[in-house]
Length: 209
Ligand SMILES: NC(=O)c1ccc[n+]([C@@H]2O[C@H](COP(=O)([O-])OP(=O)(O)OC[C@H]3O[C@@H](n4cnc5c(N)ncnc54)[C@H](OP(=O)(O)O)[C@@H]3O)[C@@H](O)[C@H]2O)c1
Image 1 (cartoon, rainbow, N blue to C red):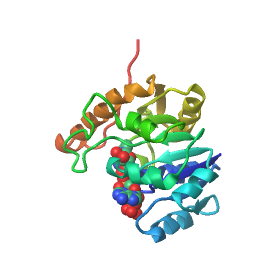
Image 2 (cartoon, protein in one colour):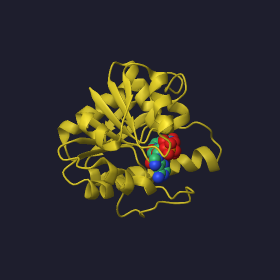
Image 3 (cartoon, rainbow, N blue to C red):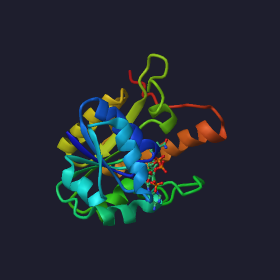
Image 4 (tube, rainbow, N blue to C red):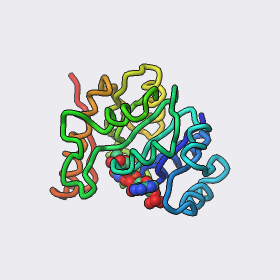
């Protein structure tokens, strides 16, 4: 599969590296310093290339949006038309200093992104913390972390669920894109537990009976 990454920071580059190792073709885009993208692609090897966000969209079967919430509008402008594309957003609507949710709790980054990227097939999932993603294993002991995905396009959700499985997490369908307004603050709770309560590397595990 061709995967276009918009925002190759801790998460975008970490996800891209794993997917490239699994045989996907990656194009990294959107940096204030293009040479950073080139370094990431070079380190990954022949399955990785670099381009503009618009080129990444053209190239991609799946476009991954992995920028801070404050950069979303600019990134999507640079991406151009996303009509019919699967747009896999990992963006949480955090304030830049992580002191709260930038959009409150009556909407979400995912819903706001869907308004901006009209006709894109938006799916959101907030994968494990970057520290976990970029470590040797994503597992907690022998357990997979649970990652919830939301969206309104069933086929697009299946594609994202498969990509999540490739990073060795348990992906759970959390319903429509609107449910991102619950998933995003839940991730904020994890951030509080990890950094304010200093619990270290934490993740969700959904128990069922
Ligand atoms: N970190 C986590 O554990 C985690 C977990 C789940 C979800 N998320 C979400 O994933 C998204 C990305 O997080 P991240 O930790 O990967 O962030 P990050 O390391 O800061 O990466 C953001 C990327 O966006 C690029 N960018 C280009 N123009 C920008 C601009 N004007 N302002 C800011 N960045 C710009 C940056 O490139 P240059 O710096 O090269 O310009 C950078 O590579 C966020 O929405 C976050 O909420 C993060």
